[in-house]
Image 1: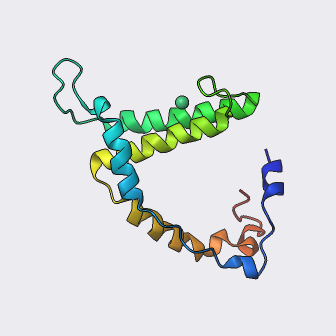
Image 2: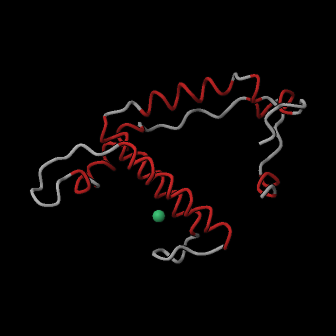
Length: 139
Ligand SMILES: [Mg+2]
């Protein structure tokens, strides 16, 4: 790890301004993913809707991140989509689970995402200057 940052262009004054926010609503995407995954929100026997356990769903999101780490450790292709890296597919799995969670519980992921991106842009502790300090965040 560490060599990944070598592929990221250096920040310059001109690149401090982020590009325009891409179009698209994450809440629409979350609703679409949740609809595609609705069978996981139904009782196995009766087919009736169930309330999913949030802790269980969060563990499943975490499991996809762990699978991604293993894929990176082994530099392996994905078992089901072998033309893609496990890294890509497991991150996609994590994203699918996050969007399904947000769609299932009616969260405003779109609003929270954009508000947090805006907040992070002005955080002093995320600046290069602050990060270079003795106790600054190194990664
Ligand atoms: Mg997976």
